[in-house]
Length: 268
Image (cartoon, rainbow, N blue to C red; front, side):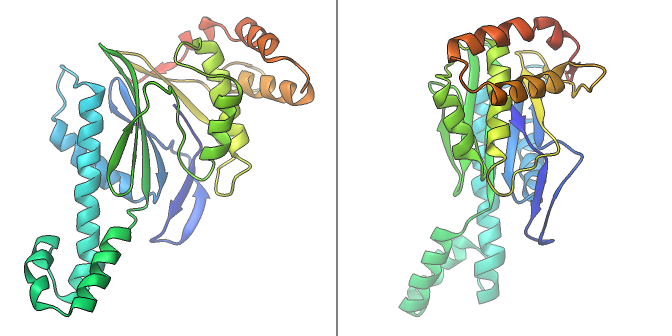
């Protein structure tokens, strides 16, 4: 799972890069990436954690995705009530359905259209590993989920098209090795920076296993590992655009070792 740290707040009407990652661990084997209004994820995940009542027996990733989707839809309904219905003197969506027969048909039609088009302003990408394997789900307005296990990748936010084309161009698939996956994910994030609203200062990469979540270290000029190693490889590729994909993959395998992952910080 890869993310920038660009924060957008409609309430504050600002956009800035925050020191805190935009990746959120839901359980010890599931992570959610966030795009959209920065004030919304907290209320969604507070809601989700209460519903999951997480114990030592971790729920399946599909169950987590379903719970998040339901929380998304429920909280979107509350926003609709606050922003559209309560200013009209109607307390809830249920109350609107009950009283519409007594209302002006034009007002009813307009209100229905506003409800239908209301954008909650949040996109979520869920990645996790359970006893059935690795899973990826996307959740978007108005609270619908997409199972992307067969595709094996996805992206959200303003740079999603840039990122997805990177994976397509590299023939990425679910059997891609971890080392190559790490590099391609980093490359997809860097290319997505060409889109507006994508943070360039920070890149976070987390690796999920069935019993732990690990953060790849940032590294620096003296300790060339983790993100720093990926950055140097990416800059080298930019200078050598004629390198065939097969040769690039061999270079990646040679430069990125499992020992780079052994020093990751565990969250479990």
